Amino acid sequence: MHAKLMAGAVLLTISSLLQPASAAPDWQMVAKAFGKSGTEMPDGVYRVGLPRTDLKVSLDGVALKPGFALGGWVAFEPMGNQAMVMGDVVLTQDEVNPVMKKLGGIEITALHNHLLRAEPMTLYMHVFGQGDPVPLAIALHAGLALSKTPMGGGAQPQAAPQIEFDAAGVDQTMGYKGKANGAVYQFTIPRAEPVEENGMEVPAAMGSAIAINFQSTGGGKAAITGDFVLTAKEVNPVIKAMQDDGIEITALHSHMLDEQPRLFFMHFWANDDAQKLANGLRAALDKVAVKKS
Image (cartoon, helix red, strand yellow):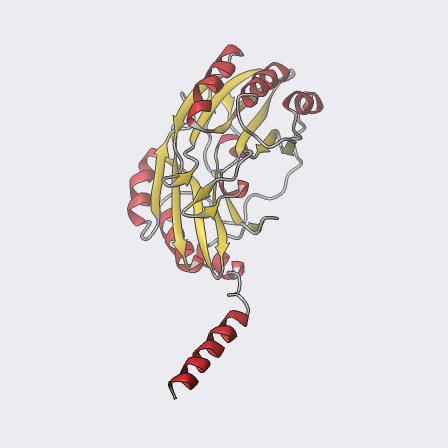
């Protein structure tokens, strides 16, 4: 009888192994719970953009486009029928504590500035969670409801402003192909080695890649901002390379808590000839282990 039970247990184990894997999360349900739909990225990440189109922020006389420096987001990476969620939400000073207190079940992994002298001042709160994506989305929605973050379908489509600098020349100098988003020209440059958090790979869509944004400011000039994703030994060589070309370092901090390798995120700002700035950024990229284009 004991042998029969053992054989039955073995068959049950084999049968369970042959069962199909847990279904991926239902992103439509996640969108409904969160209150705003997103886009499933090529790597399977479901990403929801949260640009602060309601804010009018300027820095050194430059009106900042939402896609340039005010583009919050949350992204869900599937783990079977569960998910890991990360995000970077843009908040005004008076929104920070109400939102933070309301985010039940969601960890806060960073809170900081990205820029200096911006008026009004905006802060950036990074969040993390793991589990059933629908309750995670509900918790995120409850927190963001205490801010004025737009959660509708977004503004009506408008004619895209032209990039007013030589984008092809900037591409050639940078060694990567950028992408136009209205008056903003954006680069996403992954690091050479994978980044992991709690044993899960963190893809570019969840904030592990270098982000560089150019915003046209007229006459072949552009403002630049974004963040370099760096190991400790890369930090000061990158600072020097950017400062040598007149690019201001505006913040240096962590975004995650348990990532491997340990990473630091460096934010920057300048408003100058776009080609000159591309030269400085390229010099900084030469100090970083990035994927080749």
